[in-house]
Length: 205
Image (cartoon, one colour):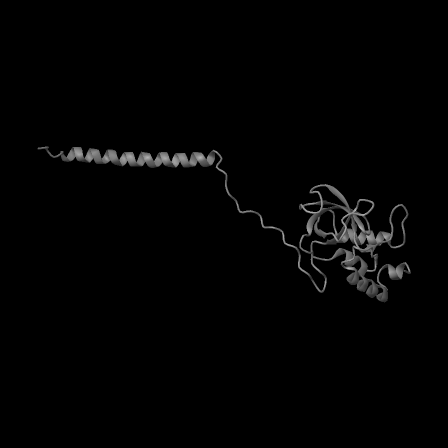
């Protein structure tokens, strides 16, 4: 028959068991801390996807499939340079010469025409350098000069092609089959002409 352990021995065994549990917890904690310090990849929330600006006051919003552009500079009242930020219709990151569809602004180069400077300045105000804007093509993406033919919306949702015509700084120019917004632009031109807006008055268009 086994003799019961003495109370002192029992206390020693219990103390040793407690130390073992404590040491195990410390080891596990050290492993976790070491793993984090060693570069366990954190999973941060993905940045929110950009949303197209909504339509306002009868002005259409960018259509499905529109891409974002970063504006580089304005060439004249109907042409700019920009870089695509999204894949789709243009090469991402490539500097692209963009011609606004459906409108025609007075020339700036090689000869300055009446209203040309005002149109270019207005386009630069609508599309500041470095701003992010939305753009979409019509039936044809390129013209014979290899410019991207696009409708463009400013950061605030303003339809830039329409704004230049409505301000009397550009006229309409319909070249089929790129005529999706021709009726809207024609109405804007008629209103600007009747109101004597912009170059309709200053240049006697």
